[in-house]
Image (cartoon, rainbow, N blue to C red; front, top):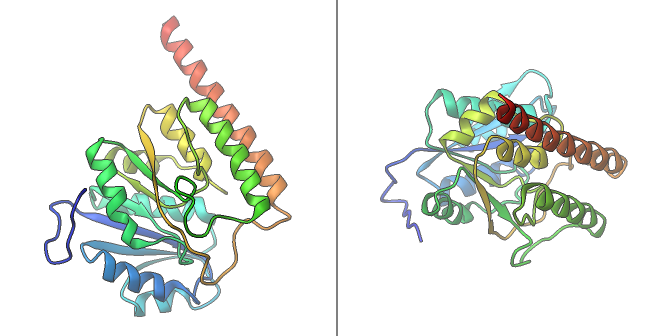
Length: 250
């Protein structure tokens, strides 16, 4: 297990990317938790065109903030963070939601996993040990469908493809800075890594219910979301197959 005490900072640098849209109710708590649990990391809040006080509250809590002039969606906000990480040559970048669902203390588990394997990305899964907040019944059905699909397409067991708790090394940071899915990118990002031959794995984490704000996936969007993501990952799998066929033929 990797031990990272606050009084003995690691020899590598870490950026915490916190995408936030109208998360004024909970963002201060998230930033304060991060600064307490991970004093060795830089905290960067990507304010995705919020109409509330998210930016001001995050700055007051001690985070660096990038204010996007319009709402790009989760994909654009997260990619902004990865571009910042690539430009400033961070060794690792971790995504943590701005709604308080992710526990910063679990970051040491992700760091241990990515360094011990080694891996290009580690995903925090709430469904391995099934502790803490899981999901609503309807969403769990959708997550299970995506888990089964992605597991078949990639050939490895994936339990929580929609988890936004992700730690990336330099190769994944570089890839995501150049290319990152839009809309609801978590599932597609796994296929993107797979298509580029990068490695990833899951580790068990405990998640909480959100502190405030509203989920970007409403009930009315759920059917559209599922249809779009399933079609997208199937197309991405086809693109990988064609790429290998073209390489073999050449």
